Image (cartoon, rainbow, N blue to C red):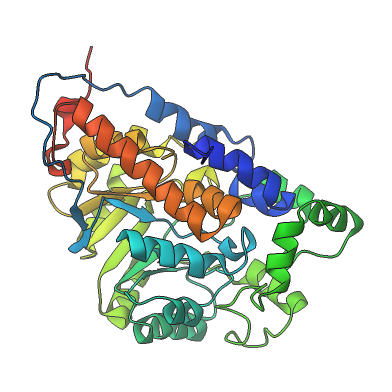
Length: 379
């Protein structure tokens, strides 16, 4: 019997199986974590209209995101250090997403490289780009994503300056972990994780080591990542990135209608309404609370997606009813991965799918394309 019935169950299993520094990395926000908490809490304030005596035969969650057919409008979000939640984590998550027919987005700060994931999958995946000071490295990353046949580039806009997450500082987060006494004790209590990590060669940032100039070991990697996020990134950079990439482009990190209008003017294919999971500007509003304003501002000009705070299929439906055309889950699939590897990611997606399907039906609709504001309860 599978005892994991929802994302919260998977989270607790992952908490027991993943070393503290890596579980905390996934499960933390910046500073007081007020925005992290608001992301979840504000979804729960949105209530559904229950409808009855509607024919529910022939239901379907099939949709599209940036023109790609998906089994449901849910993608796996780009998350750093995914391969530290479980050995070869990015490959396993990408395989699970592929089998479920939803998009997988690989982070620049992944443990498994672009080439690793491409070798382990059959269908194109998406690649998320951070812009570094070393522009030759950035250009090379874009070219590597093209060679790997990635079908979309997700450009993150909200990490020019790294927000402080107190848990990461206190835990001394590194990849691989330093062999300090607290880390050794903590890992010894998680033997399954340790054994799986011993069997893989992928334990540091695969997209960077051996590709960026002068980065061949842990010490140089640490200083390089601290120094390389580019604080000068501006709207003018989107143009050359778009030109170099030449394919579908998604802009991630929009939280204000004015920025949404500027994003729409770039010619990008979609934007992601996101506050980086509450990991950047603490005190910013939740993503779901600003979604309606952004839909009003640019919904007729560019496809709108959303991440940050989605913990259930019901949250997915809430976002779709408010105008999003696609949603992303980050922490939920990380919990599944940490709990059970590839099987856990598939279980995460199955939980989301079932919750989405049942909620849509109980609101009186058969097709996900019929989701709209009329499904939500208004006082």
